[in-house]
View 1 (cartoon, rainbow, N blue to C red):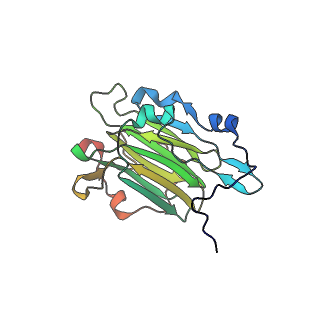
View 2: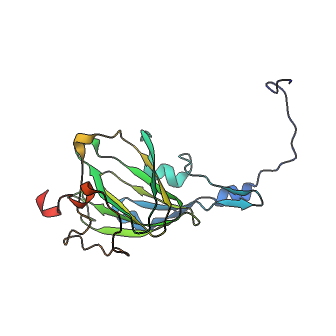
View 3: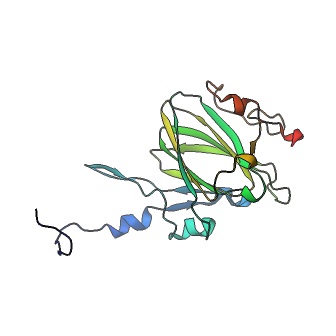
Length: 203
């Protein structure tokens, strides 16, 4: 077989520039807490779909992610509807930013601003991440994050700005009365660790 390396290959495929400029839509409703929701709808045709998961050169992403590194990319698979994960964060120098996106199914996503100096301190933001809609959320440092699956077999992708630090890991109880989060479903599955996370008044 002849090598294709170094050969010029002609093609009649045309790049859809108009569609590429529309692939990212910034949704500023979370701006008060420096969080942001992004809409990157999949490009679909007869072959299936192509999804731009992240493009840090795009203005909307770059405005929020800035010069942070990408230290981890993690995937959460969840077999049952009603699975609850969270509310998680890392303390101190290990405090991290995240971009979170649902790749399959739908999840009810929650972020809480824990920065005492912030105008959004202890404000709870929640919304639905939907694989078919292609939305994602930027979670800044100093925020707790969690979600509950709205469909079975939902998958969630996390992009992290910091390495995992087990000693810095902590969180908040999902049903903390001070936060008063209205979860859409009664939890069906939760880790023992998450079920015993501290309440806000004990931190």
